[in-house]
Length: 321
Image 1 (cartoon, rainbow, N blue to C red):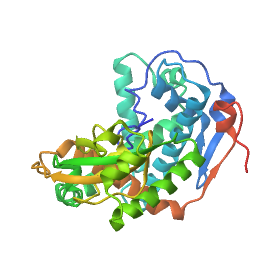
Image 2: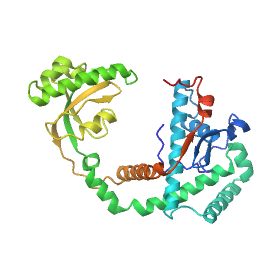
Image 3: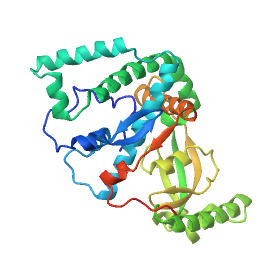
Image 4: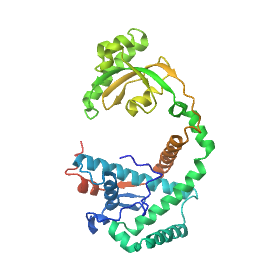
């Protein structure tokens, strides 16, 4: 579930005014986690999962995966908001009240009371107030740090990610399911030994691809062709490739297909400026700011998890080894 921290604010104008399966009062009051004494209730997590899947039918493993991701995101938002507040950029109670009045007026235009809305969407007032506090504080944080100067600085540090650079690459693939840890470990060990031979000059990359690769490209020296930063290969592959200079071979990296060694054969520099890449650049900077802020606060905070998430979304809690 991809959830951008700067846009998912539980805005009441975005929540559907439709009947949903009732979670029950007990579920809405069950605590999924506690962040410095602040409860995150199971109802919030279930609503986030509902929005992610809409009317789709999903498996139980997928449900717990989405629930775990939603809970982690909820925890991070609270950590970020704490850090923002400690820096004097958080929302005051008066500002939250003002935003709440605006919500009420917009609901009045639809002839809906706030109380009716909260009941129909199973949204506690405290959670709504948190979402408004998040909206105010996060937008203020962005205005302070997601400036043009910082966007340009980030672009210069990660130029290849945004300027349209393309790479000619080759790879060697050891097939293994990412969930099979034993197979991944074995493939990584083999790839490490092969890379050592390549770097030492004892084996050419093309010969290694012909001998070891399980990819269709093995017969052409592992040559994939030209790739861009975000296509056509998986993100882990592209990220590793774009960290290489011409002639370099990556350490073993894992993708949904298995374990790879990647060689950068040629770099075709891009010509886009930071202004040309404004939209994806801003998204990357906002994500970086969110992650950085959360990391600053986490060592200062206490996060406690409960078993209620597993009880609600999973048929069996994993056993501790």
